[in-house]
Length: 255
Ligand code: 6GU
Image 1 (cartoon, rainbow, N blue to C red):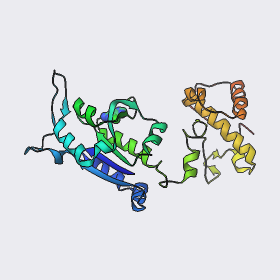
Image 2: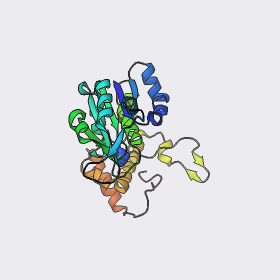
Image 3: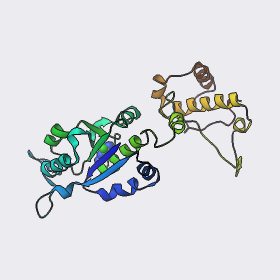
Image 4: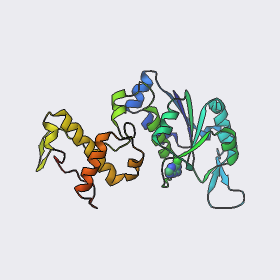
């Protein structure tokens, strides 16, 4: 996959693209990237890239001409082109998976109040937001999108790590995990996890996933593909009584 990011602040992105997993994927030839400074496509001596909004309103818009030239130069018409903006569709795992199948993905980072609509009409396939909150920097949102997408490109990370994580599998949040030491200060690792009893461990983990999902993301339970065992565990959790407290896992609850 080739990733092209158009931005007024390439230096915000550079460190991420040069960091470990990304750099390995690039070295392996799985990924290729280019960071394009939109300002390099401005033609006046001030390299102006923004102007006031027709019709009035606060803030500045990105000018169509420099951005249009940048998009032409990177071959955006032949690529999947995504504008990163708080007024786009919400990013989720399925959409990231979809983008990970592209051979050339072009991301446009918005700054100021946004970009001239004619650029969106002419070049942009999708407008994507990373969540219902406002960031001052579209580059930060673009990095989130890049990270969600590139790691799903085959060969970037191991398939096993991909399969076990939240939002693949049955659609539950991940269970808590522990490593050495088994006793840290006064806190003990749930005994079942050191028992070597694989069926009990699997049941404890599923129950912990259900509890955590109930506490933080109950709406996921409506669409999760749950094994039969999960239905029984949900009833068990219900009889144990709910709590309004922040999520805590009772060690050994499924013993
Ligand atoms: Cl894509 N950009 C900005 N500036 N803020 C956001 C966003 C994007 N997604 C959520 N908030």
